[in-house]
Length: 251
Image 1 (cartoon, rainbow, N blue to C red):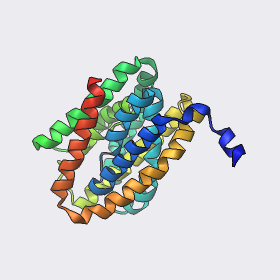
Image 2: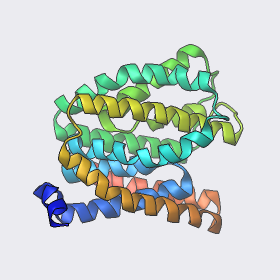
Image 3: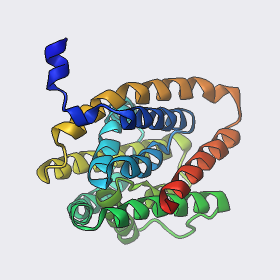
């Protein structure tokens, strides 16, 4: 046991790890009962705590858990042509966004992360939806924007969620398309961040410790879902996201 502890970098331990654990637990609760939002909690909060070049990669890595769990079930229902129309441009733009992550000032990236989340929340609360047709060109453009955002901030979901929700697909198909797309993006992020050297020992150890509260949060959140209406949980999730992102943006 002592040998195992000695392997852990000293900077991993501290009050910041406790705060991060509480953050990912909250994100897991939101993900469990609303089906989205965990990255929008984790990315800005962990970026504030550790800086974007550590916080964003950790936020991306913990998303592997729901991806591994949900992707196999989504494969039969997903419209893979739509997924890849968005996914391939996203994969092309992820490296450009990741380059911005490592070159732009930390303060700018951190505030950008928070601003992206707040724009998404305001849009969802307003009830706005994209009303146009889902053409090949538009799908590719939305995927490209999402990939650039994902590489820079770890949050590529806002444009994709708004775009897919306008398609009129059955709920099972809509959910499967989102899961399929975000799995593609997650793979792209993991490969790109690894090439850029963002998955250092500190990031990997912190991610390992944070997976436990994240999984617990998802499990508990899923069990809470039947206790109230979807609208209630959705509003709670958006309120938590709004408060956390506003704090990150303003401090």
